[in-house]
Image 1 (cartoon, rainbow, N blue to C red):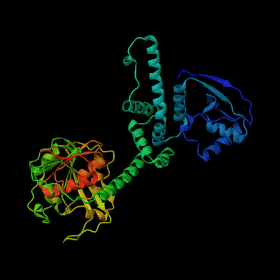
Image 2 (tube, helix red, strand yellow):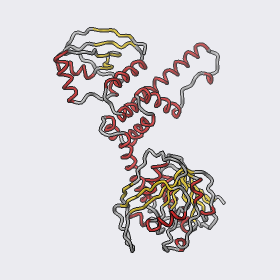
Image 3 (cartoon, rainbow, N blue to C red):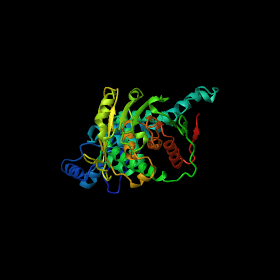
Image 4 (cartoon, rainbow, N blue to C red):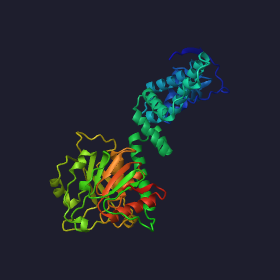
Length: 442
């Protein structure tokens, strides 16, 4: 790192104290029992390793310094000779060598180090600009190197600090999201009390619950004048599209990351729930993940009607729902069958059983008798998609998939054969987005 060591002898004095450098403060101090052991060791054997100073502050050795004071042993110091970048890299290197930090702790510390590396990068660019200006005084300003914009600088700095900390860049990104969402939970990650992945699951669960409540609450508003919708209409709702059509003849404009299909069960609850035949195997060619909820009693019939490649089953348990009994039993479970043309699933958040509490007010949002709960769509969509991904729903019903996509910053293309339910979707959209973009495209 280009620094040299200068041994400085200080007279031990209770009146002379040293504060820690803020680079050192990014790393946690020893636990009480560890510090006690260090104090006992220094009291018996003296200080083995000098304490590093930089700019008159303790760069490395805060615990050794505290132990020396407690053991009444004279501390010895070394002055670090280098620039800020050298000092920061040295602190990281020393702590990585001897500290027993978990990968999650490293990721949390990396998040706090990000601004330091960004500032160092900015200073380097400023220095390049100054030197360029000195050597090219007549050059136009546009030719002088400019600072990187935020979107470019953040990933570069994140990759650099992740490498320095010996942890994956995506792990650092996860820790950063936790800090932005729940600072207290982030402190638990930094202290080693919880892993990044477990904390992310807690954040996702809390977010899903908040999203569900928002959707349920905003959808209560009554739209006095409903727009007229006819079979064949195509509507644009923000970034989403609603096609009032028979989806077996539908060709979505975009390929998608996920399909959610909740087809009629032929249970006779309405005209559209009689005589339905599955003609939607084409969905497998449009998305990586195709989820179908055929209904518990209809599982065997559905699997016999499709040639899509079945991969797995995901189960959503509505633990407080009161299920209606039938001749064979009663169930609060919704089974989502996963079909995919992919050879393997690459899901970071893969959990195949999900417990949820349904809000009784959800039943009053729409008159659709087969509407799936918001919590189911939030769970599946969060599991397999990222922001701006496309989601397709060929049986959109009263629009829950579209509203969840809007809430999670996804794009939904949906089809629904019933003009009445298309009207409900538009009404619910207007409730959620009173000033949102809404227009008929044909």
